[in-house]
Length: 139
Image (cartoon, rainbow, N blue to C red; front, side):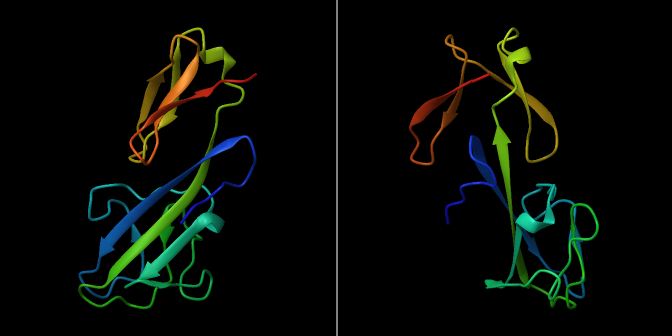
């Protein structure tokens, strides 16, 4: 499923988390089955699936606690919960970083890293088809 993002002039990102229930959980947070820490900035842009069925926010679950899916009916052992978090990344306003030729960003595990710019001060990235491209920085 494609996601354009909340604003124009931004690059959309989507992170998927998978949790396999041990049984009786009513909330999910922290590291998923792949060791990725659940992180989201706006619960409006979170989809939660239980065994492939989309749950309804504020009916089947809530996001009232930071980085936590809560209010679930008690899960059964081996239930699989998929959480999809949508967010945006803006390349605007980064001119102060172009002097260092590195752009800071948060990784899915909440650590900070940098991306080195190309010689023409563009942000390199790989597309889902495996090809490479660059995003020009604009003031």
